[in-house]
Length: 239
Image 1 (cartoon, helix red, strand yellow):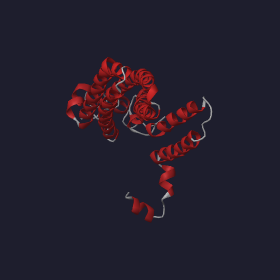
Image 2 (cartoon, rainbow, N blue to C red; image 1 turned 90 degrees about the horizontal axis):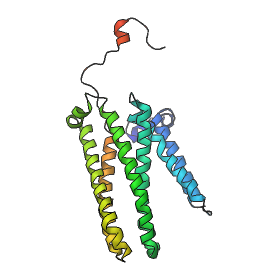
Image 3 (cartoon, one colour; image 1 turned 120 degrees about the vertical axis):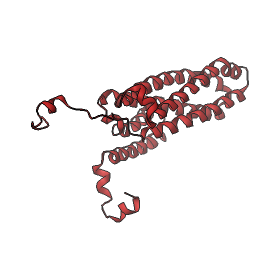
Image 4 (spheres, rainbow, N blue to C red; image 1 turned 120 degrees about the horizontal axis):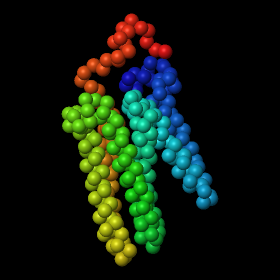
């Protein structure tokens, strides 16, 4: 419903409480507020870890109510999606934190970037593995993985994400091969140029991910017949 119609209906609160997606977003808002409060009061070395755990938990509720929860292999689909989103968030957010830290502590930039590179490699492997698993599960719901990969919009979006991930892998190789050496040699502009390119590719990958999350997974063109129901057409359903 359009928002003005919903507000004008006088029953604005009921959908927020009864619909799974809206309940998950309300939980996200509450956890995000808690993250903000805790982040402003961090005063110990262990404090950031608590904030990190809360921030990671904030990502989870919408993932439990999306397309992955409706797959036949919904347990693996949901788990792989959670790993995928958390790893991608750590990767993108970590790059933003490094860029911010470089401006405040330029003398430690080379050490910070080198440490983040190790984290980024782990995030890349987690994103790639979980993404391939989730895409395979989604595509297999239709008329076959290879067929669906080129037949529908869902498959084309998956191919676009694979291409974006390949571009990020190439940028990571270049970064380890050249940018880290240039940064250690006192050339900070090399990292700025690299980070600018990586951010652009990340924005494209995230845009594809949003489109993919809004695209229903494929369904087979033929009717799936339950052998139990076909053998006992008048048997009551459920159990």
